[in-house]
Image 1 (cartoon, rainbow, N blue to C red):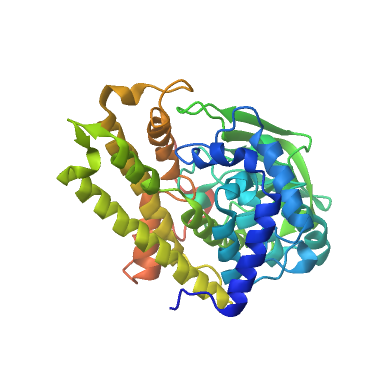
Image 2 (cartoon, rainbow, N blue to C red):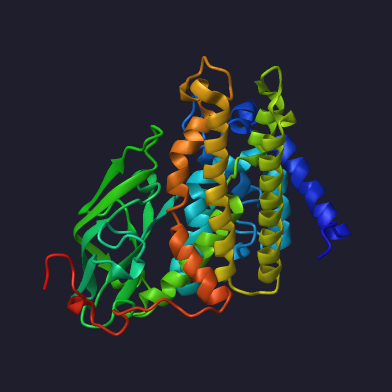
Length: 415
């Protein structure tokens, strides 16, 4: 692959750079540059409101959701142009965090399975940041087994009545709409009785309860559904075909997470160059250099694996299981780097706060948030199975429940 810009790509990059230079909120650049370790932190501004303003400005100029068709709020740009934009947007891309689930996961699913009316109504407002979307998949009883979900949707007079619970829903507390997978037929095997919908998060019977995280943030939520009414027009795909619909969401999710997940390596390299250990920079220590070299190789591998996925998209292919590689490697790398940084800091690593040195507390936040990164979008174990079975072609795990109706699968306490 040739990584140099073609003349057309170079022109696109120049235009994008000029627009960003003229329009980016440069007063936030310093804060955004220091906020990649665990959480995006703006001291005096609400990240959602600031993000909406930046997203709206981009949309009005044709820079939001570049790869989407123009009629749905995009620019009709190529996958390579999308990458060029992300490179030039740089730290300001962190302001799009509230929209990443909608743009990277929900939007492509609505585009693939929604009616033309739904696509023209919802996608432009998603692209412009007017409406934020979340993804309602995980459940307390299912864990990493998405198909083990128990949230029920029952058809009644042309509508669907939903009851159940979801958990670990990122951004549900500020989302306007959500992509919801439910069980509509418990009498068939678990992967076959599912149906996908989208719903208004302000609907009667929807209750969102934030989950307090170890790092002090509240990004995840529990969501309860009590007799929530969803019109059949908000169904995505056929009744009972929700698993196939969800694969579109999940493949896009792993590509989106794997491409955007910070590993902490640039910050770690700078930290080791500045930190003094026994009178010399930590980077002069042989063990530290060995660690840095290993992470540099992984960071490079992640970069070019992402480019390979982009090349596949440029050929019109759907995101595939190989995108699980980026998320798997980046998640564990994030945790390893944070752990080693805390070891180097020693007792100072427990300190955090605005009055401390900039490095103090940042790796602590990174370490506290890193376990969630190894769960969100598929646990390490799930991703390894996907890579083994669908990329390497190895035999699949034995599944004793594969052909068993969902309501016949034993649960704890049931004989």
